[in-house]
Structure formats: structure tokens, C-alpha cells
Length: 185
Image 1 (cartoon, rainbow, N blue to C red):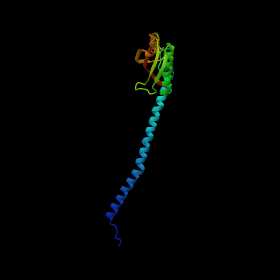
Image 2: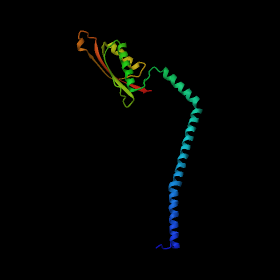
Image 3: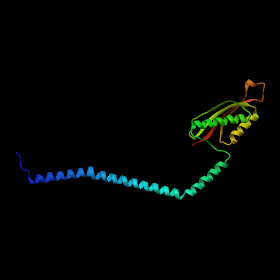
Image 4: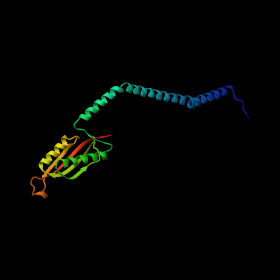
């Protein structure tokens, strides 16, 4: 038995269906469209900001080139520079070669060069040079390290007579700990 639907019930059902259809339309149509519109507007604003920044850089290109050239001249004229390398391992290799050359250039007999390939929190690598020679060689070595073309900071120094060479009283054993700032290119 189908009972006829009363006019009041029809209005309730029609109202409920209308609300349901409006909710579905809002949830699956209007809200996603508004969200997509806002995202596109944000992308457009970001692109405009990037374009403005690039235009500003283009306008300042001559001044930036001039400043870079000036800084390069200052660096090239600087007597001391940091180590430059593509990686910490290559920086350690460069420091090892620098220590070896400094020791040999000072007339010292280099017995050991240990260098760390790990950069510390300041961006520096460290190492130790052990060698023996006379006191003039030690002075030359320290002068080369502190005043040479690369920034090398002695952090420790131990000088002692070499017990194996007692017959040569002017021969000393030296161990120098160093740090060198590194610029990773």
C-alpha cells in the first residue's frame, strides 16, 4: 500500500534534496575550484616576485660585475689565502702537500704528515707535521707556515732533542699541529 505523500512531506523531501545537492556541489565543485584558483594566484604572485628580482639583478649587473672584479683584484693581491678545494678530502690533500713542502723547504727531514679530511665547525681542516732538523729549520718552518701564501694557523708546537741523534746536539725533533681554513668550491 502506497500511501500518498503529503504536501508538507514533499516540501521537506525537496528541501533536503536541495540542501544535499547544494552540499555536493559546494564540496566537489565550488570548493576545489576556489582552492585551485587561489593556488594559481599564488603561483602567479611568486612568478611575478621572481621576475621582479631577476629584473633588479639585470639592472644591477654592471654594478655587481664591477664589485666582483674589485673583490677578485683584492683577493689576487692578497698575500695569504684560504685553501680552495672541491671536497674536504681534496682540501686535506692540499694541506698535506703544503705541510710537506714547508718542511722540506725549511731544510727539515719530514718523518710524518697526518691530515684530517673532516672539516670542523669553523670550516677548517687540521693536521700534524713531524720532522727533525736544526733550530733554524724550525724557525724557517714556522715562518713559512704563518706567513706563507696560504692561511695556516699553528695550534701546537713540541720541540725536543732527538735521543737517537745524541751525537748531533743541534738536531731537534719538532711536531707542529696546524689548522687551515677551507673554502669548498
